[in-house]
Image 1 (tube, rainbow, N blue to C red):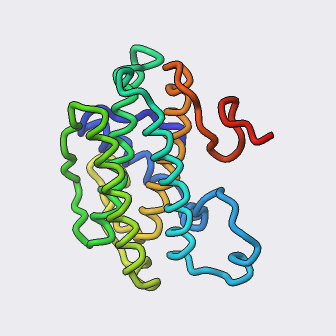
Image 2 (image 1 turned 135 degrees about the horizontal axis):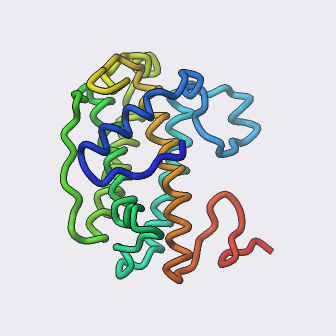
Length: 205
């Protein structure tokens, strides 16, 4: 989902409209992260598959966030691009949306908290959000992931979508923006960690 990161509440709402237009086949696209043969054979539920992918992907995202030099938080590759810190805050916002949906507290239009001034505060907020989302996914019953929550589907239009759909959408979008941030990381002069395979700075051989 090649979408720019929003830097204002209005822009975030426009982004959510665009995200919601993804077909419901995305519900099954939990992640491109490989699972072991044993896991595939056992046939985990969609909730468990989402949880497993979320834990793997969020650990990688946190690794990228911690590798980024806070002194370059304002870095942007183009005048119209969002800063590195705005990208980092988007990860935290997507966690908050997942958390609200799983708690049945999501309301439209959503109220987003302001971005912290410091880079480290964004990273801490993301890490804490991950812990809460993991706990919620662990305690949620499989059938509850089919329950409906409100989501934006067009300008000032809303409809109900399954929790699984919304959470998967947020995870996949965060993976996309992590790729963006890894480019910023290289531009900052910092080392780029391994993500799905070796990087120049973390070779496997």
